[in-house]
Each structure stands twice: as C-alpha cells, then as structure tokens.
Length: 238
Image 1 (tube, one colour):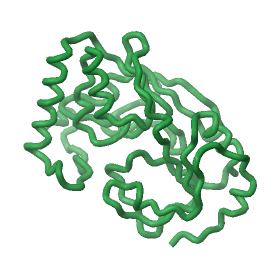
Image 2: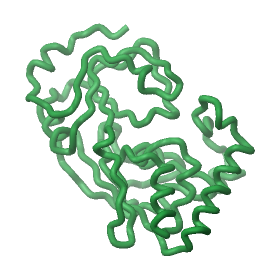
Image 3: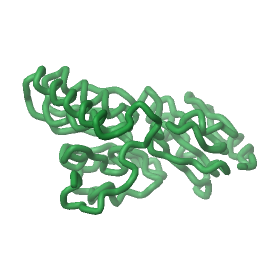
Image 4: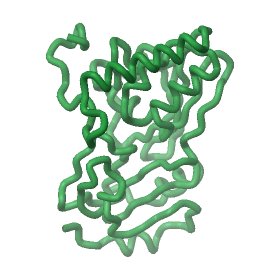
C-alpha cells in the first residue's frame, strides 16, 4: 500500500483550481475497477492550472498520467507520486476549419460521432476504440485498418518543464501502438484531418464498426478491447 509521504509537497503547492487529493482510490477511475491508491491524484481545471502545478512540483516526484483507463491495470500497491487525469474541461470537440479539434480527454466515440454530425469523413474508426484522444495519441491507437497517425495533423503537449509545444505527426515517430514522446509529457489536444462526406453514409460506417465489434468482441463485458499487439504489423487486421 502507498504510504502518504506527500504532505510536504502539497503544502508547497500553490492554490489550485482543480481537484487534488491524497491517497485516492484509483479503482474508482479504472474500467476494471481495480487498483490501489494514488499518493496524490490531480485533475486540473485547465491548462494554466496544470502548468502551475507542474512548475511547482519537485522534479524528483514521479508523475503518471492516466486517461479513461479502459486498458489499464493498476497494481494493488498503488502508484507513487502524482497521478494526473484530465477531466471534462479537456474534452471539448469543435471544428477548426477542415480539421476536427479534440481535447485529450474527449472520448474516441464522441469524436467519431461529432465528425459524422458535421459531415466529416475519415474518423469513423475511432468509434471502435474504447478510449480517449489522449490515449490514442500516446499509443497511436487504431482499428479497422486506420490509426491515429493516419489522421493526425498536429498535437498540443505540455512538458514536465511547463513548455507548451505543437507537434506534427512526423515529430512523434508514430509506429504501431507506439511513439517516441517521453512518458511524462502530457497531451492536451489533437487536430485531426478529415474530408467532406455524406453525413448519413458516415453514420452507417460507424454503425458498421459497432456491428463488427459486437460480432467479434464481448462488448457488454468489462474488457480492454484488443489486449494483445498484433504480430503482423504490416497488416494489423490479420
């Protein structure tokens, strides 16, 4: 079990507008309802709140970022240091010209539906991924012959040193379920490429993805989706 030794850290932190808790039960946040305690659990109010936290958090304190935890197993011993989870304040989805801009905590399914409602094609595969945009960026998530790298225009990140940067997909070296971004970097949002399409056809495509998942996976059970990496990386559908 995690032992609380973070009181001095919390005492040094500025007044934050987000939620910060000690010894938080992480099983409340994971898809599988398992996991021990986070020494400190922080949900920032916005990017300025997050930056303030990072600036005042001692560099020797480990930071772990979690998303919706749909494929995450947390040990009973918990996680030392600070666990950060972006909440609904980072879940906005909107059009930015021909790009779909989505916050890191926006659910993949919601992004697919938003694109369909706006007649934007090319993002329907996100409806088959049970996670968030931040997680999809972190692991180059994909389904049904498409993956994040195929549609990513650029992503906004914040580093441990509070630098906010904009990265192109080519800057991230995104390969099968992997990229080269440091683990303590936090994804803030992504802008996704799309093309104009027929709204009703796009919705049919999403329904087709739903039917494929229901016919091949126990979607009514608590699963992490595709648990194992595919050995044939040149053709992930084999």
